[in-house]
Length: 161
Image (cartoon, rainbow, N blue to C red; front, side, top):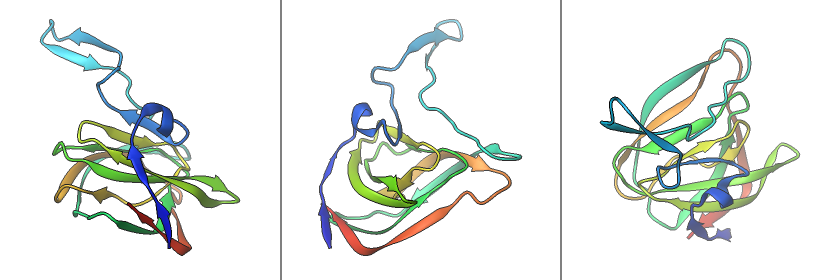
């Protein structure tokens, strides 16, 4: 099993795979007669293909404990997929570059409970991995015609520490 060391999530490190959703450093302005701050345009929602539409869901992920074994990754070729924690709990994100339609050179990130992620369309990523108890996530992804899920099972699993 290959060892994959996790690192803190930053916008720069995650940029090749998607967007970090957080208020820190975001463009913001007052709305609703000054009673609300809008943190504007935090992620690029991508909806590709015929008859696509945005889906807003809540996923409840079971808690995992480090080290975590990653045996499979998935991607969504027809749309982005955003995960925003609702319980202010950290979670693990594993992403990989694409090479010949397979995930290669994975990276692991510890995402703070005040951050979310938006995987760009066609980005390889591991499944939802809550780290601090069973956790709820607001998820924005694509619905519509076409197959929007591809899975890849590794011959040799990764162990994230």
